[in-house]
Image (cartoon, rainbow, N blue to C red; front, side):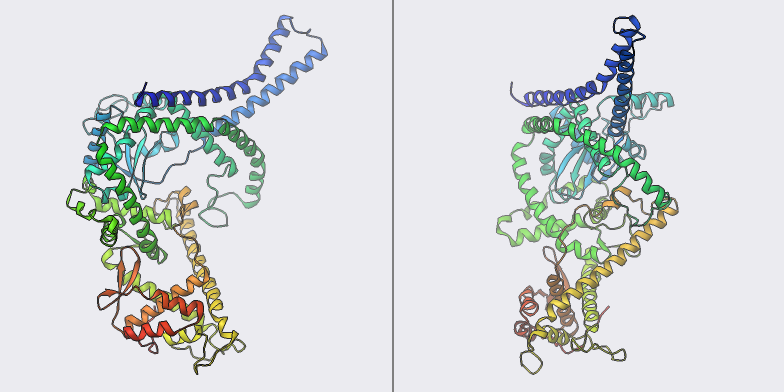
Length: 628
């Protein structure tokens, strides 16, 4: 047998193997109880020992006690596995009312491939798409809030208990339907990468989603769904055991006690009492995971193979072109986040149109890279974001989620966390970033403006913030052209170290203020921004870049000082490059040749290349610059 049926049968066979491991674990837990029942029944019937035989009596009660202990431990392990909340990807839910055309496209795909339609659609700020099971009872409240769309055939939301869309039903029917829904497998949620909607065309998105939507067929099979729930429950139980039963492993409120929490001594005693119990739960869960790991992996591979085979009949040729767009979108999205969005996030601003910005970034990439030639011509076709009723609002929501995931920002805008449009980015982000870094550099210089053995007195006036002062501190020659010796050679590493300390101090103050805000919100009885405590405790989940070294910080600050001097004395202006982020514009054109002269000054103490560059642009380093 070939085709999607073969893959589905292979996936079901692997799912049954996982379920057999679950049944084996249950049988092992019930085995002492069965032995105890046999001993008690045999003793009552007079077939095993006598009622007054002390040896058999001790054995019976020993076996009964051991069986009760094993049943108690098994019940505790099962309770943790069942109640543990599986990990779920933070997404922006899309209701059908806000994207009827997108739901219609997905429904048509499911009908063409003869598979169930996904139960809902959500967006994630990533270049990937997948199906995600959200049928765990912990996520039932989300469906009640109406943030999960319905894919009913007529576009209306079906009312539980009736089987008909839009018809009211009694409360008792709702409860019965809820129990039936918990028993019957439900279709997973379709998670779509938000950059795909803005960069891809409608036909490309349909071809890309075809194999993903085809995966709903095996997903709703009872055996496969039960095996997946079991594996996800084990994984969640391991996470709970690792945390010792705490809801999150890290508190968003800082190292102090959480608002409304028990006293520190009582909490410590409770953690000490729970630690051995959860260690045992974790050991059992890991043992079961190791036993079913290979079967689960093969099951997922078989499901993917069956979905790919079933989707082969839907836009197969166009899917090859769409896969090329996936790689291009990933490259542009990565550059946009690391080069453009990250500087704004560090300043307390978040770009509100990241998905729209990825189109500009990819268009610029196609203009620069000959390998991407021809891709920009697709922009005349209908973009997939037209399937949304209000793409601007959804773009803003996904942009805020991206800031939380990749930087750890607050859940909602505020005075210190405000959105910024692309038109305002050069003035409100680039220029302000340069001047903040220049001010920080001069604060560090003011802390040690004199010779190394003569600290400045309290009455000494601060030196004017000039670029010449920075160059003089970093150069290996003195003002009269003579070599300054090892004392000056150590100034670069010393400045870099002090900059690192200064930046770490500022970040600590910002984190403390954020924690205080979360604590006040919790004390008031609500999440001030609808924040997710789990997400706020872990964010940033995916840091975009490793921490910058001291030399990298010093080079960035010197570059910022040069750019400030160019803006104030040479008529330059801040700009935005979609692939490289903040840019210096001289006579309306970007100057990308500043990095090497700055590195020569920072790493080698050679100011010759930088002074040549300054003379070419017309920058006057002796003039004071405006700081923030």
